[in-house]
Image (cartoon, rainbow, N blue to C red; front, side):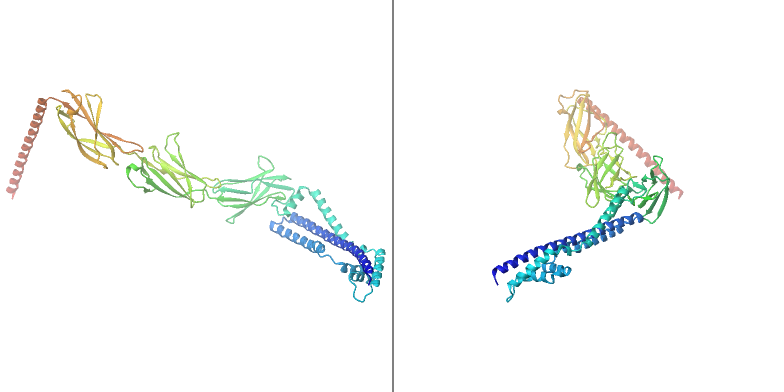
Length: 557
């Protein structure tokens, strides 16, 4: 076999392969175009049919979702089997050659033989014969229309069907306008009402109201305005209702219905002429309220008292204390305040509560104003609803009483003393929580007040003591005949709302000479002896009466 013969056979085979490739491309193009045409026709037609059914029957969303899924799967099936697979799994030269020979019997197996033998010559086969076979096949292919073996009838049918379907859809969209757009949106599961002669537009379809509030449902008609409308409601409790609606006075296109004191959630639909609204819902939620309040009184440090739990009905609180509140609401809340009562105008009357874990709130009141008479707790939830009819808890603010002090000695409020006298002044002091200072004060003839600080015990609420007052330490010396006024002043240790100051009664001493003092003592001794004599006489009389009674009883026996 000559090398030249093999080369010519290869060249001839290449030309045949090029012509077969053109047939293969046409076969693939026609097949994919046919599949694409049928996919467009099927998808658009199914979509139009679903839109028509939806317009007639007002299909629920789940049925529209099923139709859309079926439409999508059918189009995907056509595209996969009639577009994707033919473009990927294209026939080889042998398969194309066989198809051509079936359609063109003139080749009588020459085309397949030329394709298969030109590339490899079996041993003992004449190259000249193969060369001649290829040349003859080429001549036959020149006079034969290889592309014509591909039939395009189905292709043109599918294209025509696609064009007609699209034209029909375009015509319907042009005719229906916005209605067609709404139906298309509904086909793709957008939640809008089916277009009718009367469009029903609802202000709010999802309402949240607090239990016991009034709620007004309002719808507006567009297009054909009916003279009457209808509102259908269905409560969660199972009750249902149907209400006839007339246009409101504010405009003949507005229909509304007010429900007073709503207690139960419900769904609703407006029906105006041939139109209906989407289903709306009114959700009734409870108002925030106080479920429980725990109170703790924190006493001022100066009292030395420990924190004490208090009942809401027993809030008699010492001024200067803090009242700590732990509040548990009936639902999750966003914020809360404590509102105070009885305070003078202009004084802060609210205390913010802080949120804690576990849906609880906490707050603290400083009990410093004696005018405070009570408080209430106000809550707000995440919907903006506030509590109502809050309980007012009474508070009695008890002031820290001033220390009580009295002079126990001398007994008389006016005494005579000499300039050298040492006068023991006994006194008794009481206070609820102790004192921080005790002073002995005096004034000569109404002059400047002088004071002496007295020694205090470490801690005491009751003190009985005396102070030895040396008049000879007064500088300048007190003139004879002068009066000196003296008293005791006590300051407690209230460093929050005080301090409070207690003061004894004022006593007097008159500075006299030694002779006058002796005369005073003699007079007092005489008075004392006289009182003793009177007492002895009274005793004698009692003894006589007793003896007489004894004798009378003895005689009766």
